Image 1 (cartoon, helix red, strand yellow):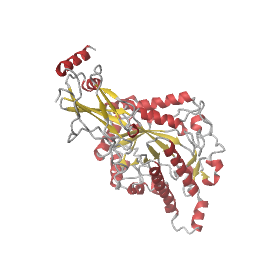
Image 2 (tube, rainbow, N blue to C red):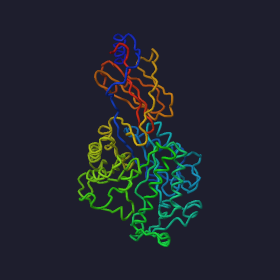
Image 3 (spheres, rainbow, N blue to C red):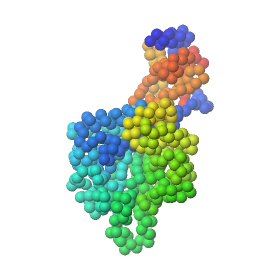
Image 4 (cartoon, rainbow, N blue to C red):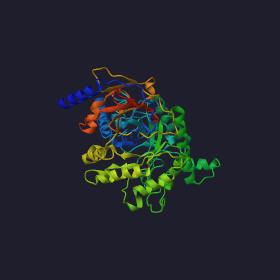
Length: 505
C-alpha cells in the first residue's frame, strides 16, 4: 500500500493531473499481441473428461465445467474443444437426436433441474476469453460404454442407416445419403442455434478395423446397390469419395450459416506410410478411407489438427518430420495446429517433450502457431506440466490467429473515455457495435517498452498502474501512452491508435 501511494504521489507531482490528450495518429509499426492457438480436448465419451460420470446433478455438472474452464484460463489457453455428440446423441437440447447417456445416465433423459449444457459452456467459455469449439463424431452410432439405446436412437429409429461391428459398437454407413443428411442436419442445427466458434471432427470416419475384429467394414448392401446403379469406382475409392463429399458439404453448410464459425478436422497423424519416406505406421487412407491430405489440399477446413502423438525423436513417427510433411501439403495456407499428447509431458515423464514440441511448432509455423492438447486430463493431473507451460511457452496471453480467408475487415476502433479524477490510472472503453467484439487488447507503454493485456468481451476498464506493477515488479517508470483495440470473431484487430497521457510526450 505504501509503495502504491508513493508511486501515485510521483505521478501527481510530475503530471499534476492525469488527463488524456487527443488521440495521436496511428503509429507506423504498432505493437502486436502474441498470436497462437492454444486448445485442449474435453471428451465426454465414456465420461473421459466431462462430466466425470453419468447422472451428476445440474449443479455438479456445472461446477465441473467451471473448474476445467478456469484451469484453461489460468494457463493462458484461448480455446476449448468440447465433445457434444459422442454417439449420435446430444449433450445439448436437440430435436434431432436424444439426450446423451454420458450426461444423465439414461439416453433421452434431460438434465434435472433442466439446463442446456452447451449454452452454459458457450457463455462460461466466452466470459473467460476462451473460444468454444464443438466436437462431433459424424458416424459413430453407439459406443460400448453408452448404456442402452433409447427409442429415438438412430440404432432403433433408423436401423437401415447403421451396421453392427464385431466389438458390439454400432456405426452409421458413411456411403448412405441418409447418414450424410442426418449428420449434416445436426451440424447446421448447432451452428444456427448456438454462439459457437468452431465445429470439430476427429479421426473416426470409417472405424478402425480392430473394432470389427480385423474384418472389412460390413457395408455389402450399400456396396452392391452402388454397383447395380452403375458405379465404377473401386470399393476403397467409393468409400473415400463418400467421406470427401461429406467433408466438403459440411464446410460449405457451416459457412452458409455463419461464416466466422471455423471448421476443424483432426485426422490420424499419418496419411500413409512412406509420406514422408521415413514414416511408418497405420495407413488411414486405406484403413479409415480418410483422404485427409485431399481435404487439406482443397482447403475444405479452416484449421487442420493431425494427431501427432509421438515424440520428437521417435524416428518412424517423428513429430517435426510429420508436421513438416503436413505443412508441405497445406497449399491453401490454412491453420495447421497439430494435436499433441500432453501425457508425454506428465510428472512421470519429461515436461520438456511437450515444451519442445510447442517450440518446434512456433519455429516451423511462425505465421500461425498453435496446438491442441490431448487431453485436458493431463493438465488436471500433472502439476509439473501446468507449471512448465505457464512459466514457459504459455507465460504470456495470446490471441487466436486470424482466419484471413474468411474475413479481413477489422472492427471499428473502441471509444476511449477519460477516467474520473479518483481513478487516475483507469482506462475505460466502449464500442458502438459490441456484438462485433470478442476480446479487447489494452497496450500500455512505459519507458520504451510496450506491454499488453488481453481483456474479455464484458470488460470495460483496466487499472494500468496495477498492470505495470504486475508486469515490472514495482517499476516506478512513468506510463507515457496506451492504446485499446477490439478483436472480432474472426480474429481481426481494429486500428491501433496511440493515446498519450497529459504531460508525457
